[in-house]
Image (cartoon, rainbow, N blue to C red; front, side, top):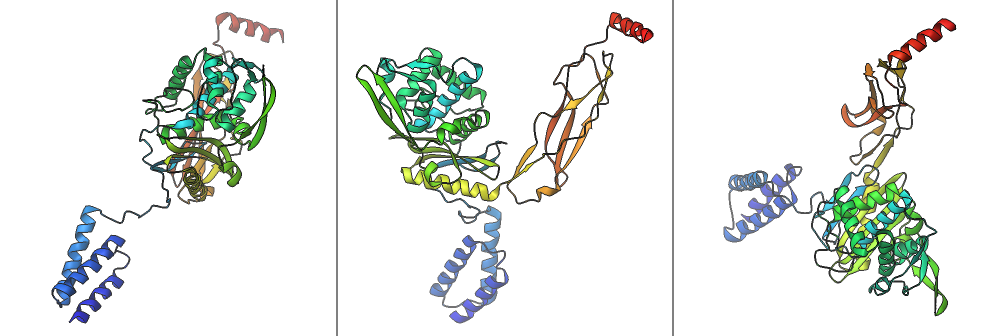
Length: 429
C-alpha cells in the first residue's frame, strides 16, 4: 500500500513542478512521510486533497522559501548598493538601521575639505599646523606632532590612505577653528544631503555615544563626494606612499599604506573608505567603475576585515552584472522660443547635461526614445537658464526621465525708449 501512496504523489509533483515552491516540496515530503508512517496506506484521492489544501495555504499566506530571489549572498547585517550617477538603489539589506560607522565617517570629513577647496577657502598648498589636541588622537594615525606642519594635500593623503585620526582633527581645526564647529558643519551637510538617520559626534569616527549613521546615508555622502569631486580618487587609489615629518626632532619618512585592500585586489576599485572599531566592527564604503558604470557598495558591521572585502566584491560584481547604462550623446534639435515684449524676438535653448539612465532589468536600451517639447512663447524679461522646454525620455512607452531646456541668454523687457531708438535706427539704414 505504501507504493500506492508514493507513486501518485510523485506523479502530482512532476505534473505541477512549475507551481510547486521549495517550501511546498518540503511540506510534501513531510506529509508523505507522516502518512506512510502513521497510516501505512491512504487512497490516492485523499492524498491529492491533502496536497491541494497545503498548496492553497501556501498561496494564501504568500509563504515561500527565504532564499528565493536572494541573488546576493553576504554576511554583513547591513548593506546597500547604489549606482552613482543616478542614485538608483540596486540592492539593500537593513540599509536604514542605525550603526556606528567608525572611520567611514571620514567620507564626510573629506567632503567638507573638498567643499572648502572648491570655494577657495583653503588651497592644497596651505600649511596646516598640528595642535596638541589633534596630535593626541588615538586609533589609526600618522603620528603628527604638536607644532608640525603639513600641507592640505598631504593631510588628505593621510586621511584617505592611512585613515589618520590626527590629520582629520588638524584639518577640522584649520577649516572651522575647532572640531566642534566642524562637526556642526558635518551634520548640516548631512541634513542637506537627506541623510535622515545620521548624527556625527566627531570628525574621525572614534566610538562615541550617539555617533551613528546608516548604510543608505553613507551611500548618499559617498555619492556626493565622488560625483562632485572625482579628484578624491587621486587620493583614495594610492596604495602606498611616503610622507615626511619635519619637527624639532628632525626629519623622517613615514610610510602610508591603504587600509582599503580592494584597491589592490579588485581591478575596478576606485576607493573609498574603510572603518573599524570594537563597536562598529568592520565597515567599508567601496566605489568601483566598469564600462562607464560607477557603483557605491556599503558594508556595515562585517565580522572581520576579509569578510567586508568579500561582501563588497560580491555586491559590486552583482551590480556590474545587473547594470546597463544608457547615455544620450546626440545633440538635440531645439527650436527657438518666441519672446513677447522683449528686446529680442526669440531666445535659443540649450541642454547643459547629458541624459543617463541605468537599467537593472535587462531591457533593450536601444529602444529608448525622446520627445522635445518647447514653450510656444515666453514673456520678457527672460533670465539665462530659465526653463523654456523639456526633453522627455521613454522606454517601452513609459517615461524614464527628463532634462530641462534652458534659455541660452538673458533678454530684457522692451521699453518705450528702446523701441523708439530701434525705429529711428531703421530709418537711418
